[in-house]
Length: 477
Image 1: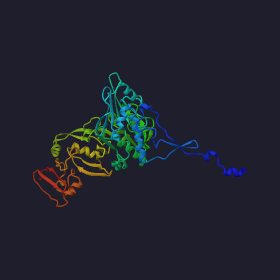
Image 2: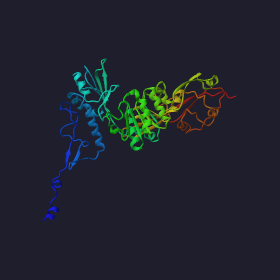
Image 3: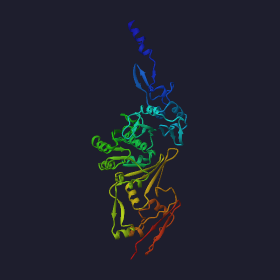
Image 4: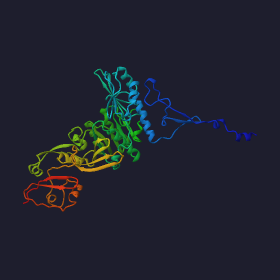
């Protein structure tokens, strides 16, 4: 009887078990509850299953999970706002494209979207509103920046002369997977990349995705030197957007160059990721790291390569610029003045990327050749890479002025440097790409001209463009 009851009566712990879902919600005050946190709303990436009293994490979700995570992080940022402002901004149709929220004492709060500014309240911001917002973020560093733990949002403060905070700029941070797909071939080849662009164009978003790509996809040891916690987010635990890459925080922005050297000497990385190189010491530290054979990925403020050339603090990143005095014979041969600018040494970065927009990049595959061409007064060869509306990559190589948007261009340059053989032989000058040379002679025979003391103008015509250049030849004696 005992055996029969043992095998036919299961323990109550098993027969009466029912799976339970435990939902965890941040403990916010009801007056300032964040966006999208409602009593009956479920967040699949927050819950765990309780089986026999032991919590087990549920499997991760792919596409919807990423969107939900961004909604939660956006809600944590909007929890800094008063209830009325949070309600009005939640009703905006471009909520997911929010750029930043600006709050200044005595002025109406503004939410900035791609379509323009949106007034959040008719009542001006008070001191209590500023104090409420600052009490929910981390400590402000010496650069007046703070953040929300384990998010990519950046809170920047404006202080008066007494050091009191009188204004806040709450910028939304996003980890966009795939934002660096246009540069995947350069990243895979191990090239050192220098990204240039104005503020707000998406430099940090791209290098964050590059760090994730190198660490997760190509299994490299990646170390991020995060000066203001923009790449890895605020807090001791970095944001999931950087993947398996490691992160070193910088206590003071003036110590970034020391942390760069420390990262190389102590942690043996294969890749160093730097955000916003802005001083000469940081540029020299990056140059030292590049000479040790480490791949560099960094950003700098600017619009084009010419901005770096004209910046005495950062010109070392592209090899440095020096003034050279030519002899009379060499100056006459080149057709230039006796004092010219030339590149001093090898470039710290092998490739340069100008970020035009979030879907368009201008790539200089050989940064040294670009600098030499700009200093010589020629137009560098660039590669334009775009992402269309379907998410497909479109690339085109062009030989044009990077500040011009015209399709039909006339290239005028002094080609007296070309040798006698290149001038009259079956060679095209180095200023013309091979593609142009092929297009120009596609439908006609090569025309050879032997001139004596005459400046001639040769035009190569193709079906797409007309390219001209002035060819000055020395006298044939």
